[in-house]
Image (cartoon, rainbow, N blue to C red; front, side, top):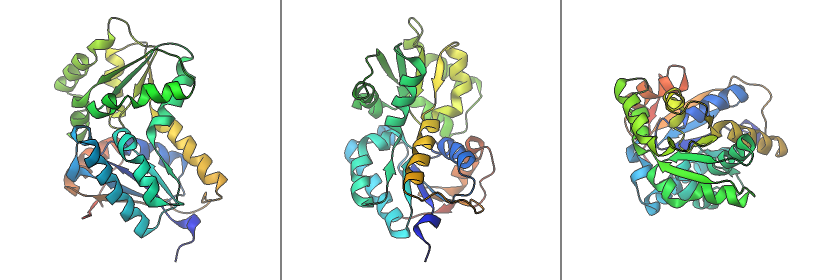
Length: 267
């Protein structure tokens, strides 16, 4: 039986978006094992009800609880909003961290009192999670949150640098053109895959990827718990509730390395 320190870190998202978080994690934690679940059977979370998203989170957490992990990272903004509490309930004493607070903290540090923009899925924007979190952290900055649901499908379909993708990005970012924010939170883990097009449409705006702050939070949690693994090969296992082949094709681009061993998971 594995000691707690040698257990994997669990991570999940509705699809390939969380791989943008995993990519940063692997640089920071090269010796850690990671078990990644892409819930592609229920993609996109951004068009589901809060009750459905909460249920997906519960089922995934129950699986992680059964196999044994030492930290669970919800690498999805929408899932963080609507399933963080139930996931924490299921995981018990296993620490669980989500994206929203990390993204809000990173934005406050980056813009220091200036206007903040947020792009996210429809349900994340509707929840008001980012403006509320920024206020709760003491930020009085003006926040404009805009739903850019189409960006999720672009990344999931591998449309990262096509003329169509460029047109969609320019159209959906139009609410920011008249009065651009100083910083823009990429409030969906799919969106770093389009960061070059977003920056092209909003030159001079600082793009804030919550993944980096999330990795720092994970490092802090693991260090304080004495759970950092100092040596090892750092293996990654990919489980997918939908089609592993489609996930592997789009995910390899976002992760920056080939995914050849994704397996089907039935929850």
